[in-house]
Length: 461
Image 1 (cartoon, rainbow, N blue to C red):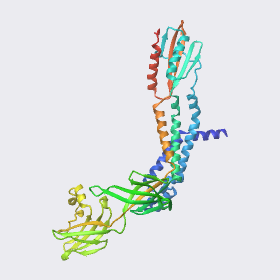
Image 2: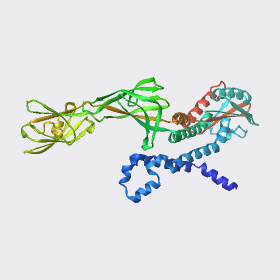
Image 3: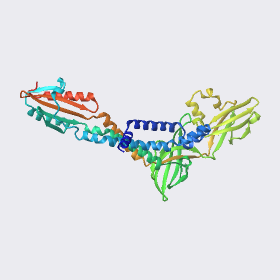
Image 4: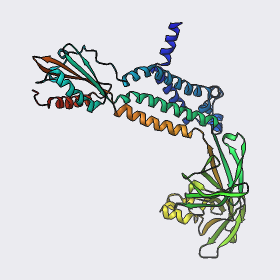
């Protein structure tokens, strides 16, 4: 029974187990990043061979972060960390409480000559002076009298022994926060048309909906564009209504969330509402412009029978350059296809020479006609991402402890010093030794400083 317990203990406290778990968790994170997850993975799954698809589903690779094996890894890692901490804490506590007290076996004969100095006073007098000197540097000092003289022991930075345990606690809180967010957290979307009010949150992955205990009204939606027509800034002016009363108002922008009702709202996306009119204008040379409202599939003849125009496609934000419509012009000269952008002037200013490089974007490609377009009567809807994550405080606390623990571990060390005094013809010979759990260079420098202070006393040689 004892051997089984010992084997289990060695397994749970093994560094190899920790490395293996961290490696597998990292591999799972890579798979969860590379492989599309949940709803986004449906299109990817359709392209897989049936045998490979069956393997992916068996391994739950389309929902890695909620898979049984990934959660088990996350649960086994804390077990490993707790077992390691419990196994090593008693020794660290003993070191913190003072470490091994001097037992009187330390001898000057065991020290190198460069660590030994001589003093004119007897060991009893020197011991009192050196005890005060060491206490000033280390705080608590232990003194043992030996047949040859005295041994003084002191240490500093003993708290650094706990740095690794602070790191372990930080990792445990990070894992607990992640699991709390995955199990009890809520993520969804709220779509609101400009001027309308909504109180329903759709869960991600098509997992149903939740009626919120408050309503959100989008008072106004604003979008600004770069010179090339790409969206620059979009914001939603929101009003939160509870029990028929306005409770809060605020502007929601990308990277500037609003917290309300236990949820945190982010500006995720936006779109154009259906029902807007697509207005196409065309002019021949310096003549009078003609306008007409069109839709995809419409056909109309150009004046004088010079050709027939067909509307092939209409896009709200083609290549992030704004609304555009694709036309096909058929005439005795053949067929010409052209994209007509609403923001063509801004596109040309931002990209000089673009029409020569991409003739398909030239609204005058079918000379002598020049086409232009604009959307009229259009409205926007805003998409808000809503999140409730009870694990956030745990993650924040864990991250803070992790940073503090790493700083303690790497920037501090537990240094211990021992001063050995032996009598020789009524005088004293003093030796210094030291040890540290890390940073041997720093220990060497501090020992040199301490030895110099020991040798400064009057009467030393």
